Length: 399
Picture 1 (cartoon, rainbow, N blue to C red):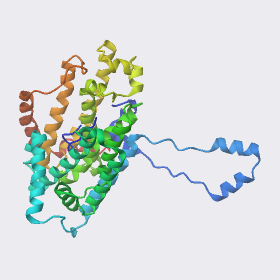
Picture 2 (spheres, helix red, strand yellow):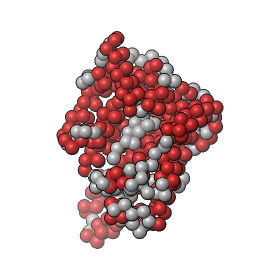
Picture 3 (cartoon, rainbow, N blue to C red):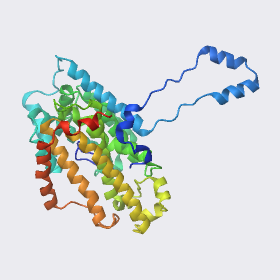
Picture 4 (cartoon, one colour):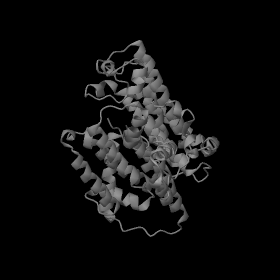
């Protein structure tokens, strides 16, 4: 169940995340080395001594999904920093020129307008160059998502995804396959966008082909990053950070990542019934067990007291990610805040709808009505205008 769409519009927090994203700044990288002399001594030691030495060997602890993902955040932040330091960059020639390139971007805009109406409306506040770039990213994400969720999903194989990955590399190298690729190829030549989040989204599609259960939240977090968190990392270089923002670049990207995670967790909680009918359970198996639940409860759609308690915890975690994400939105360029903030407010209301349905996400669809959607837009617009980077700068500088 993938649900990707810009920072923005796409597609569980355990005790180890109680400190929020601040922990990432304190993650220390260890170097594990063994000298040739040490190995020589070990070979000449007695059997007993070898046993004692072996017991003293320190094995590096496995890295969590959050730590692995944060490496990508730092890489993208460094790329943006490098682009800022360069005063003059000679852009590579566009894969298409003039009217053909304009037509490619316009077609991307038409796709965005058709499938993400609210977000498309928000992009109209951006500068033309940023607007077109966001459309191109949106279309690539949508096409990637449809590989496993679209009408031809049953025919998609790992080999097909390999071809899609190769096509991505050609696109970044300025060799697009079609007009949609050409628009994105032009975008990545103009903005400091890293290829890794795009590769990672394709990896999320691979996970959907081979995996239908997640043992714990660490596994689910990685999946959510792949299919939705990546979109934030793709989009922020285009949306831009406010010139007066005092927050670190990495912290803003972490907030963008948080919004993708929050959106995907919300997708998962909304679609429990739909996914279960496809034989998929996107809920941490260990947390289900701790709540006294099993796959059978999910597959049979049992709304019990245990299920309601379990869902309350899952919703609380999703809201924590939304709270982290909102802090970063106000650090964005002023013209980019409204569509992102509107997306957050609308998606967060899906969690309210699940609660209103008495946690029956098996047979009742949680959705936000048109009236509530329309009411959210002016609120998001007002907050985007009134609240600036200074409000949350102190918090984000803790990262």
